Image (cartoon, rainbow, N blue to C red; front, side, top):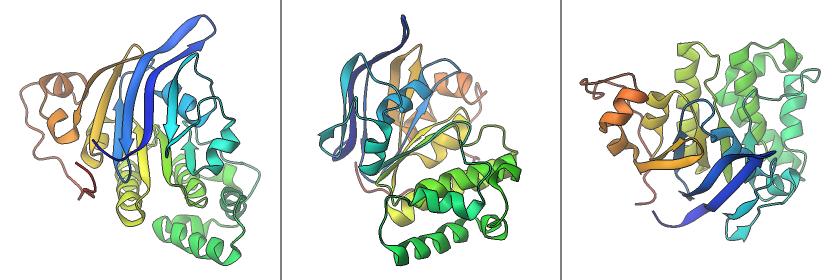
Length: 257
């Protein structure tokens, strides 16, 4: 891979005395979708929290767009163009949908651009337009996930970190969310680092993937090749001798090799 927007090198992060990630290294090319797969407790969320500044690493470096950012506060990381959509969404439940979206653009000074971007996210998620004056806490789980992604988009990020966007959603909504993630990448060039337990969906929209086990990267390859690996089929796709060729695929933006 070339032209890395994000480079993570030999990262070690602890929860108290417990090492959660162990010498993790990976990169995310500019304009790509990269996924990190792994079981519960593998350290996927810790990786995202360390990259976005929510947690500080004990060792290693995180380089974003040519600048080392490990140890920076999350708000400074966000202002550099890297937005984290955490597991659990963490919207502002007492604010309206529209107010949540405008909070995503709080660092911006271009009022006309903010208005255009509101129309953009309402185009991706029309239900949010219909719920614009509704308190965010009253939305369904799927609608809250749409709002969390849209709020991050309102900052015009260079890169988004998405943590389990399918968690707790009905299968139809999962397909919708992943289609929108692919469109955001394809239409706006937003680089995406995706942590996801739904390996089938993740591997069909991402370009490159890493497998994390017990805090270590144990496998990496293009997603097309990972889909053909027996270990991935058995442990992450629930398959043994079956082919995944019948699975729906979305067009990928190939801006790197």
